[in-house]
Image 1 (cartoon, helix red, strand yellow):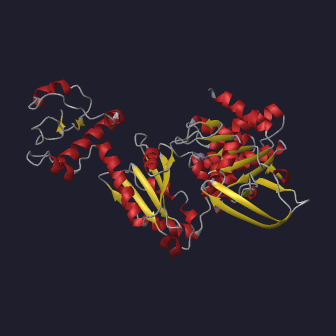
Image 2 (cartoon, rainbow, N blue to C red; image 1 turned 90 degrees about the vertical axis):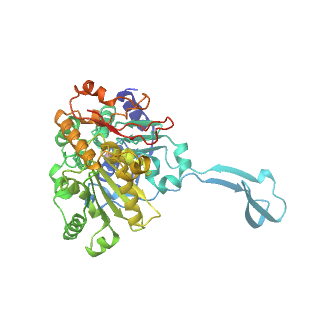
Length: 480
Ligand SMILES: [Mn+2]
Protein backbone atom coordinates (compact mmCIF):
# COMPACT_ATOMS: atom_id res chain seq x y z
CA UNK A 1 0.00 0.00 0.00
CA UNK A 2 1.44 3.30 -0.95
CA UNK A 3 1.90 5.85 1.80
CA UNK A 4 -0.60 8.11 0.06
CA UNK A 5 -3.32 5.48 0.24
CA UNK A 6 -2.61 5.10 3.96
CA UNK A 7 -2.70 8.84 4.40
CA UNK A 8 -6.04 9.02 2.63
CA UNK A 9 -7.43 6.30 4.91
CA UNK A 10 -6.21 8.25 7.92
CA UNK A 11 -7.81 11.52 6.85
CA UNK A 12 -11.05 9.77 5.83
CA UNK A 13 -11.38 8.04 9.17
CA UNK A 14 -10.60 11.23 11.08
CA UNK A 15 -13.25 13.09 9.12
CA UNK A 16 -15.85 10.41 9.90
CA UNK A 17 -15.08 10.42 13.64
CA UNK A 18 -16.40 12.77 16.28
CA UNK A 19 -14.98 11.76 19.66
CA UNK A 20 -11.29 11.15 19.26
CA UNK A 21 -8.89 9.82 21.86
CA UNK A 22 -5.25 10.70 21.22
CA UNK A 23 -2.63 8.66 23.05
CA UNK A 24 1.11 9.41 23.12
CA UNK A 25 3.51 6.72 24.30
CA UNK A 26 4.97 6.69 27.80
CA UNK A 27 7.36 7.90 29.00
CA UNK A 28 6.40 10.98 27.00
CA UNK A 29 8.99 12.91 25.01
CA UNK A 30 9.05 15.92 22.73
CA UNK A 31 7.92 13.89 19.75
CA UNK A 32 5.06 12.00 21.37
CA UNK A 33 3.72 15.03 23.25
CA UNK A 34 4.33 17.37 20.31
CA UNK A 35 2.38 15.00 18.07
CA UNK A 36 -0.46 14.57 20.53
CA UNK A 37 -1.03 18.26 21.24
CA UNK A 38 -0.62 19.20 17.56
CA UNK A 39 -3.34 16.68 16.72
CA UNK A 40 -5.49 18.01 19.55
CA UNK A 41 -5.29 21.60 18.27
CA UNK A 42 -5.76 20.70 14.61
CA UNK A 43 -8.69 18.35 15.22
CA UNK A 44 -10.31 20.93 17.47
CA UNK A 45 -10.32 23.30 14.54
CA UNK A 46 -12.28 20.63 12.68
CA UNK A 47 -14.77 20.77 15.57
CA UNK A 48 -13.91 17.31 16.83
CA UNK A 49 -14.22 16.38 20.45
CA UNK A 50 -10.61 15.46 21.29
CA UNK A 51 -9.11 14.00 24.46
CA UNK A 52 -5.37 13.52 24.99
CA UNK A 53 -4.37 11.01 27.65
CA UNK A 54 -0.87 10.07 28.74
CA UNK A 55 -0.02 7.72 31.59
CA UNK A 56 3.09 9.52 32.85
CA UNK A 57 3.57 13.14 33.78
CA UNK A 58 5.02 15.43 31.14
CA UNK A 59 8.67 16.30 31.81
CA UNK A 60 9.30 19.80 33.14
CA UNK A 61 11.41 20.48 30.07
CA UNK A 62 8.34 20.30 27.83
CA UNK A 63 6.07 22.49 29.92
CA UNK A 64 6.75 25.42 27.60
CA UNK A 65 4.84 23.69 24.79
CA UNK A 66 1.66 25.49 23.76
CA UNK A 67 -1.52 24.01 25.29
CA UNK A 68 0.45 21.47 27.29
CA UNK A 69 -2.35 21.50 29.89
CA UNK A 70 -4.74 19.66 27.57
CA UNK A 71 -2.89 16.42 28.27
CA UNK A 72 -4.73 14.45 30.94
CA UNK A 73 -3.79 11.19 32.59
CA UNK A 74 -7.17 9.62 33.03
CA UNK A 75 -9.56 8.07 30.58
CA UNK A 76 -13.29 8.44 31.05
CA UNK A 77 -14.72 5.04 31.93
CA UNK A 78 -15.42 3.48 28.63
CA UNK A 79 -17.89 0.67 28.09
CA UNK A 80 -20.15 -0.02 30.99
CA UNK A 81 -22.88 -2.56 30.61
CA UNK A 82 -26.05 -1.62 32.44
CA UNK A 83 -28.65 -4.11 33.67
CA UNK A 84 -31.90 -2.33 34.61
CA UNK A 85 -34.72 -3.75 36.71
CA UNK A 86 -38.18 -2.26 36.50
CA UNK A 87 -39.27 -1.93 40.15
CA UNK A 88 -42.78 -0.67 39.46
CA UNK A 89 -44.42 -3.82 40.83
CA UNK A 90 -41.61 -5.34 42.82
CA UNK A 91 -39.52 -4.18 45.75
CA UNK A 92 -35.95 -5.39 46.12
CA UNK A 93 -34.86 -6.52 49.57
CA UNK A 94 -31.29 -7.54 48.82
CA UNK A 95 -28.66 -7.74 46.05
CA UNK A 96 -25.83 -10.22 46.13
CA UNK A 97 -23.14 -11.01 43.63
CA UNK A 98 -21.19 -14.23 43.31
CA UNK A 99 -18.76 -15.92 40.96
CA UNK A 100 -19.10 -19.52 39.77
CA UNK A 101 -16.37 -20.46 37.37
CA UNK A 102 -16.84 -18.16 34.40
CA UNK A 103 -20.24 -16.94 35.56
CA UNK A 104 -20.73 -13.73 37.47
CA UNK A 105 -24.15 -13.88 39.17
CA UNK A 106 -26.26 -11.01 40.37
CA UNK A 107 -28.83 -12.32 42.80
CA UNK A 108 -31.89 -10.14 43.41
CA UNK A 109 -34.13 -11.02 46.33
CA UNK A 110 -37.58 -9.38 46.19
CA UNK A 111 -39.26 -8.15 49.37
CA UNK A 112 -42.54 -9.24 47.92
CA UNK A 113 -43.84 -10.31 44.53
CA UNK A 114 -41.76 -12.00 41.84
CA UNK A 115 -39.14 -10.81 39.41
CA UNK A 116 -39.57 -12.05 35.85
CA UNK A 117 -37.52 -11.58 32.73
CA UNK A 118 -39.92 -8.87 31.68
CA UNK A 119 -38.71 -6.67 34.53
CA UNK A 120 -35.16 -6.64 33.20
CA UNK A 121 -33.63 -4.66 30.36
CA UNK A 122 -30.05 -4.43 29.13
CA UNK A 123 -28.29 -1.30 28.03
CA UNK A 124 -24.91 -0.86 26.60
CA UNK A 125 -23.08 1.86 28.40
CA UNK A 126 -22.17 4.71 26.14
CA UNK A 127 -18.86 4.31 24.34
CA UNK A 128 -16.99 7.50 24.96
CA UNK A 129 -14.80 7.52 21.87
CA UNK A 130 -15.23 6.55 18.24
CA UNK A 131 -11.57 6.72 17.25
CA UNK A 132 -8.22 6.20 18.95
CA UNK A 133 -5.08 7.69 17.49
CA UNK A 134 -1.80 6.50 19.01
CA UNK A 135 1.27 8.59 18.28
CA UNK A 136 4.95 7.61 18.60
CA UNK A 137 3.83 4.30 20.11
CA UNK A 138 5.59 1.16 18.90
CA UNK A 139 3.32 -1.22 20.76
CA UNK A 140 0.21 -0.95 22.88
CA UNK A 141 2.04 -1.96 26.05
CA UNK A 142 3.78 1.43 25.90
CA UNK A 143 0.46 2.96 26.85
CA UNK A 144 0.76 1.11 30.16
CA UNK A 145 -2.39 0.59 32.20
CA UNK A 146 -4.31 2.96 29.94
CA UNK A 147 -4.22 0.04 27.55
CA UNK A 148 -4.25 -2.82 30.04
CA UNK A 149 -7.34 -1.52 31.85
CA UNK A 150 -9.19 -0.82 28.62
CA UNK A 151 -8.21 -3.61 26.22
CA UNK A 152 -11.87 -4.03 25.16
CA UNK A 153 -11.96 -0.45 23.97
CA UNK A 154 -9.04 -1.11 21.64
CA UNK A 155 -10.98 -3.98 20.08
CA UNK A 156 -14.20 -2.04 19.70
CA UNK A 157 -12.88 1.24 18.36
CA UNK A 158 -10.74 1.72 15.27
CA UNK A 159 -7.14 2.61 16.05
CA UNK A 160 -4.91 4.76 13.84
CA UNK A 161 -1.28 4.04 14.61
CA UNK A 162 1.08 6.84 13.57
CA UNK A 163 4.69 6.04 14.36
CA UNK A 164 8.29 5.74 13.15
CA UNK A 165 9.77 2.97 15.34
CA UNK A 166 11.35 -0.06 13.68
CA UNK A 167 9.79 -2.19 16.38
CA UNK A 168 6.24 -1.04 15.62
CA UNK A 169 3.88 -4.01 15.83
CA UNK A 170 1.25 -2.61 13.42
CA UNK A 171 -1.51 -2.99 15.99
CA UNK A 172 -3.79 -0.41 14.38
CA UNK A 173 -6.69 -0.69 11.98
CA UNK A 174 -4.70 1.79 9.95
CA UNK A 175 -0.95 1.82 10.40
CA UNK A 176 0.80 4.93 9.24
CA UNK A 177 4.28 3.71 10.11
CA UNK A 178 7.39 4.98 8.37
CA UNK A 179 10.64 3.84 9.92
CA UNK A 180 12.58 6.25 7.71
CA UNK A 181 10.90 9.23 9.32
CA UNK A 182 13.00 11.02 11.92
CA UNK A 183 10.00 11.58 14.14
CA UNK A 184 6.27 11.04 14.35
CA UNK A 185 5.64 14.75 13.88
CA UNK A 186 7.41 14.51 10.53
CA UNK A 187 4.68 12.01 9.52
CA UNK A 188 1.91 14.15 10.97
CA UNK A 189 2.73 17.23 8.94
CA UNK A 190 1.56 15.84 5.56
CA UNK A 191 -1.52 14.30 7.23
CA UNK A 192 -2.54 17.66 8.70
CA UNK A 193 -1.78 19.39 5.40
CA UNK A 194 -4.01 16.91 3.61
CA UNK A 195 -6.82 17.42 6.14
CA UNK A 196 -6.44 21.19 5.87
CA UNK A 197 -6.68 20.92 2.10
CA UNK A 198 -9.69 18.61 2.09
CA UNK A 199 -11.62 20.61 4.68
CA UNK A 200 -10.39 24.02 3.53
CA UNK A 201 -9.48 24.95 7.09
CA UNK A 202 -6.20 26.52 8.09
CA UNK A 203 -4.98 23.83 10.50
CA UNK A 204 -1.30 24.54 10.88
CA UNK A 205 -0.88 27.73 12.85
CA UNK A 206 2.33 28.72 14.59
CA UNK A 207 1.45 26.71 17.72
CA UNK A 208 0.83 23.52 15.75
CA UNK A 209 4.00 24.17 13.74
CA UNK A 210 5.99 24.69 16.95
CA UNK A 211 4.70 21.40 18.36
CA UNK A 212 5.57 19.52 15.19
CA UNK A 213 9.02 21.08 14.98
CA UNK A 214 9.64 20.12 18.62
CA UNK A 215 9.24 16.45 17.65
CA UNK A 216 11.75 16.72 14.81
CA UNK A 217 14.25 18.68 16.90
CA UNK A 218 14.11 16.42 19.95
CA UNK A 219 14.13 13.13 18.03
CA UNK A 220 17.07 14.16 15.85
CA UNK A 221 18.96 15.64 18.83
CA UNK A 222 18.73 18.99 17.09
CA UNK A 223 19.69 17.46 13.72
CA UNK A 224 22.79 15.79 15.15
CA UNK A 225 21.66 12.16 15.25
CA UNK A 226 22.09 9.63 12.47
CA UNK A 227 18.33 9.58 11.80
CA UNK A 228 18.46 13.10 10.39
CA UNK A 229 17.49 12.89 6.72
CA UNK A 230 17.04 15.44 3.93
CA UNK A 231 13.33 15.04 4.60
CA UNK A 232 13.70 16.06 8.24
CA UNK A 233 15.44 19.26 7.17
CA UNK A 234 12.82 19.89 4.50
CA UNK A 235 9.92 19.37 6.92
CA UNK A 236 11.64 21.55 9.53
CA UNK A 237 12.07 24.32 6.98
CA UNK A 238 8.42 24.01 6.02
CA UNK A 239 7.37 24.22 9.68
CA UNK A 240 9.43 27.35 10.21
CA UNK A 241 7.64 28.91 7.27
CA UNK A 242 4.36 27.99 9.01
CA UNK A 243 5.60 30.06 11.93
CA UNK A 244 7.21 27.45 14.17
CA UNK A 245 9.14 29.15 16.95
CA UNK A 246 12.46 27.36 16.59
CA UNK A 247 14.37 29.60 19.02
CA UNK A 248 11.79 29.02 21.72
CA UNK A 249 12.24 25.26 21.36
CA UNK A 250 16.03 25.42 21.41
CA UNK A 251 16.01 27.82 24.34
CA UNK A 252 13.84 25.57 26.47
CA UNK A 253 15.23 22.23 25.49
CA UNK A 254 18.93 22.84 25.04
CA UNK A 255 19.90 26.08 26.70
CA UNK A 256 18.16 25.76 30.00
CA UNK A 257 20.04 23.59 32.43
CA UNK A 258 19.48 23.90 36.11
CA UNK A 259 22.31 23.63 38.60
CA UNK A 260 20.89 20.35 39.91
CA UNK A 261 20.99 18.95 36.40
CA UNK A 262 24.62 19.96 35.92
CA UNK A 263 25.47 18.26 39.23
CA UNK A 264 23.66 15.13 38.13
CA UNK A 265 25.45 15.08 34.79
CA UNK A 266 28.77 15.49 36.56
CA UNK A 267 27.91 12.54 38.76
CA UNK A 268 26.94 10.34 35.82
CA UNK A 269 30.02 11.29 33.83
CA UNK A 270 32.35 10.43 36.72
CA UNK A 271 30.69 7.03 36.96
CA UNK A 272 31.39 6.15 33.34
CA UNK A 273 32.59 2.58 32.86
CA UNK A 274 34.32 1.30 29.79
CA UNK A 275 35.01 -2.09 28.30
CA UNK A 276 37.54 -1.33 25.62
CA UNK A 277 37.77 -4.88 24.39
CA UNK A 278 34.06 -5.00 23.60
CA UNK A 279 33.86 -1.26 22.88
CA UNK A 280 31.13 -0.65 25.40
CA UNK A 281 30.67 2.47 27.48
CA UNK A 282 28.03 2.84 30.14
CA UNK A 283 27.00 4.60 33.28
CA UNK A 284 24.47 3.91 35.98
CA UNK A 285 22.48 6.53 37.83
CA UNK A 286 20.79 5.49 41.06
CA UNK A 287 18.08 6.98 43.23
CA UNK A 288 20.89 7.95 45.61
CA UNK A 289 22.47 10.04 42.85
CA UNK A 290 19.19 11.87 42.30
CA UNK A 291 18.92 12.49 46.04
CA UNK A 292 22.52 13.65 46.46
CA UNK A 293 22.33 16.09 43.58
CA UNK A 294 18.75 17.15 44.38
CA UNK A 295 17.75 16.36 40.84
CA UNK A 296 14.83 14.62 39.20
CA UNK A 297 14.81 11.44 37.13
CA UNK A 298 13.81 13.33 33.99
CA UNK A 299 16.90 15.54 34.29
CA UNK A 300 19.09 12.78 32.92
CA UNK A 301 17.64 14.15 29.66
CA UNK A 302 19.98 13.65 26.76
CA UNK A 303 22.95 12.70 28.92
CA UNK A 304 23.19 9.52 26.89
CA UNK A 305 24.22 11.70 23.94
CA UNK A 306 26.79 13.34 26.21
CA UNK A 307 28.17 9.87 26.97
CA UNK A 308 28.50 9.24 23.24
CA UNK A 309 30.49 12.37 22.59
CA UNK A 310 32.71 11.60 25.57
CA UNK A 311 33.51 8.10 24.36
CA UNK A 312 34.66 8.32 20.76
CA UNK A 313 35.85 4.71 20.51
CA UNK A 314 32.68 3.16 21.85
CA UNK A 315 30.22 1.30 19.66
CA UNK A 316 27.62 0.45 22.26
CA UNK A 317 26.64 3.06 24.82
CA UNK A 318 24.04 2.69 27.50
CA UNK A 319 22.74 4.57 30.47
CA UNK A 320 20.96 2.69 33.21
CA UNK A 321 18.63 4.66 35.42
CA UNK A 322 17.19 3.35 38.65
CA UNK A 323 13.56 4.38 38.76
CA UNK A 324 11.68 5.24 41.93
CA UNK A 325 9.94 1.84 41.91
CA UNK A 326 13.31 0.07 41.69
CA UNK A 327 13.11 -0.91 38.02
CA UNK A 328 16.16 -0.29 35.89
CA UNK A 329 15.41 1.75 32.80
CA UNK A 330 18.05 1.49 30.07
CA UNK A 331 18.70 3.85 27.15
CA UNK A 332 20.85 2.27 24.51
CA UNK A 333 22.75 3.81 21.60
CA UNK A 334 24.95 2.24 18.96
CA UNK A 335 27.33 4.15 16.72
CA UNK A 336 27.22 1.72 13.82
CA UNK A 337 24.15 0.68 11.86
CA UNK A 338 25.49 -2.87 11.92
CA UNK A 339 24.69 -3.13 15.64
CA UNK A 340 20.93 -3.27 15.93
CA UNK A 341 20.03 -1.53 19.18
CA UNK A 342 16.36 -2.35 18.82
CA UNK A 343 17.15 -6.08 18.47
CA UNK A 344 19.20 -5.97 21.68
CA UNK A 345 16.42 -4.04 23.44
CA UNK A 346 13.89 -6.59 22.23
CA UNK A 347 15.73 -9.40 24.02
CA UNK A 348 14.89 -7.48 27.20
CA UNK A 349 11.30 -6.83 26.15
CA UNK A 350 11.95 -3.30 24.93
CA UNK A 351 12.31 -1.76 21.50
CA UNK A 352 13.22 1.30 19.50
CA UNK A 353 15.32 2.15 16.50
CA UNK A 354 18.39 0.58 14.90
CA UNK A 355 20.71 2.96 16.71
CA UNK A 356 18.65 4.16 19.65
CA UNK A 357 16.51 1.94 21.80
CA UNK A 358 15.41 1.35 25.36
CA UNK A 359 14.08 -1.24 27.77
CA UNK A 360 13.33 -1.88 31.43
CA UNK A 361 14.37 -4.59 33.84
CA UNK A 362 12.34 -5.13 36.98
CA UNK A 363 12.59 -7.47 39.94
CA UNK A 364 16.37 -7.15 40.15
CA UNK A 365 18.79 -4.91 41.96
CA UNK A 366 20.43 -2.27 39.79
CA UNK A 367 23.74 -4.09 40.24
CA UNK A 368 22.27 -7.36 38.96
CA UNK A 369 20.48 -5.61 36.13
CA UNK A 370 23.73 -3.88 35.16
CA UNK A 371 25.53 -7.23 35.16
CA UNK A 372 22.85 -8.85 33.02
CA UNK A 373 22.91 -6.04 30.49
CA UNK A 374 26.68 -5.85 30.25
CA UNK A 375 26.90 -9.62 29.73
CA UNK A 376 24.40 -9.40 26.89
CA UNK A 377 26.24 -6.49 25.26
CA UNK A 378 29.53 -8.36 25.56
CA UNK A 379 27.98 -11.40 23.93
CA UNK A 380 26.67 -9.32 21.01
CA UNK A 381 29.98 -7.52 20.59
CA UNK A 382 32.10 -10.67 21.00
CA UNK A 383 30.21 -12.31 18.18
CA UNK A 384 30.34 -9.24 16.00
CA UNK A 385 33.99 -8.45 16.56
CA UNK A 386 35.04 -12.09 16.54
CA UNK A 387 36.28 -12.00 20.11
CA UNK A 388 36.80 -15.51 21.35
CA UNK A 389 35.77 -16.40 24.83
CA UNK A 390 39.09 -17.60 26.27
CA UNK A 391 37.44 -19.86 28.84
CA UNK A 392 35.09 -21.60 26.40
CA UNK A 393 37.89 -22.15 23.94
CA UNK A 394 40.16 -23.66 26.55
CA UNK A 395 37.43 -26.14 27.43
CA UNK A 396 36.74 -27.07 23.85
CA UNK A 397 40.24 -27.91 22.73
CA UNK A 398 42.65 -28.47 25.55
CA UNK A 399 45.07 -30.71 23.62
CA UNK A 400 46.05 -28.42 20.76
CA UNK A 401 47.96 -25.19 21.17
CA UNK A 402 45.62 -22.23 20.81
CA UNK A 403 46.18 -19.27 18.66
CA UNK A 404 47.24 -16.56 21.01
CA UNK A 405 44.25 -14.50 22.06
CA UNK A 406 46.33 -11.36 21.97
CA UNK A 407 47.26 -12.19 18.45
CA UNK A 408 43.65 -12.85 17.60
CA UNK A 409 42.56 -9.50 18.96
CA UNK A 410 45.39 -7.84 17.16
CA UNK A 411 44.34 -9.42 13.90
CA UNK A 412 40.68 -8.60 14.48
CA UNK A 413 41.64 -5.00 15.03
CA UNK A 414 43.90 -4.95 11.99
CA UNK A 415 41.13 -6.41 9.88
CA UNK A 416 38.68 -3.92 11.24
CA UNK A 417 41.01 -1.01 10.60
CA UNK A 418 41.79 -2.08 7.08
CA UNK A 419 38.14 -2.70 6.35
CA UNK A 420 37.14 0.61 7.75
CA UNK A 421 39.65 2.22 5.47
CA UNK A 422 38.05 0.44 2.56
CA UNK A 423 34.61 1.20 3.88
CA UNK A 424 33.56 -2.41 3.55
CA UNK A 425 33.63 -3.20 7.24
CA UNK A 426 29.98 -4.13 7.64
CA UNK A 427 30.05 -6.57 4.82
CA UNK A 428 33.11 -8.35 6.11
CA UNK A 429 32.17 -8.27 9.75
CA UNK A 430 28.75 -9.68 9.07
CA UNK A 431 30.07 -12.68 7.22
CA UNK A 432 28.78 -16.00 8.43
CA UNK A 433 31.23 -18.49 9.85
CA UNK A 434 32.62 -20.72 7.15
CA UNK A 435 31.88 -24.33 7.85
CA UNK A 436 34.58 -26.65 6.66
CA UNK A 437 33.19 -29.71 4.97
CA UNK A 438 36.56 -31.18 4.21
CA UNK A 439 37.72 -34.19 6.19
CA UNK A 440 40.13 -33.89 9.05
CA UNK A 441 43.66 -33.06 7.98
CA UNK A 442 42.60 -30.63 5.29
CA UNK A 443 45.46 -28.71 3.82
CA UNK A 444 44.67 -25.25 4.94
CA UNK A 445 48.10 -24.06 3.93
CA UNK A 446 47.53 -24.90 0.29
CA UNK A 447 44.46 -22.75 0.15
CA UNK A 448 46.35 -19.67 1.08
CA UNK A 449 47.16 -18.27 -2.35
CA UNK A 450 43.49 -18.17 -3.29
CA UNK A 451 42.78 -15.82 -0.44
CA UNK A 452 45.46 -13.34 -1.42
CA UNK A 453 43.05 -11.34 -3.50
CA UNK A 454 41.13 -10.31 -0.39
CA UNK A 455 41.02 -6.63 0.23
CA UNK A 456 41.81 -6.86 3.87
CA UNK A 457 43.14 -9.32 6.39
CA UNK A 458 40.22 -11.45 7.24
CA UNK A 459 39.62 -13.88 9.99
CA UNK A 460 36.72 -16.22 10.10
CA UNK A 461 35.64 -18.40 12.93
CA UNK A 462 35.25 -21.96 11.75
CA UNK A 463 32.60 -24.15 13.18
CA UNK A 464 34.00 -27.01 15.21
CA UNK A 465 34.10 -30.19 13.16
CA UNK A 466 31.53 -32.77 13.98
CA UNK A 467 33.24 -35.98 12.94
CA UNK A 468 34.30 -38.31 15.72
CA UNK A 469 37.91 -37.95 16.68
CA UNK A 470 38.02 -34.31 15.78
CA UNK A 471 37.21 -33.01 19.19
CA UNK A 472 40.79 -32.01 19.86
CA UNK A 473 40.98 -30.02 16.66
CA UNK A 474 41.45 -26.29 16.89
CA UNK A 475 38.06 -24.73 16.64
CA UNK A 476 39.07 -21.53 14.96
CA UNK A 477 41.61 -20.82 12.31
CA UNK A 478 42.95 -17.85 10.53
CA UNK A 479 42.99 -17.65 6.84
CA UNK A 480 45.32 -15.45 4.95
MN1 LIG B 1 9.66 9.59 18.14
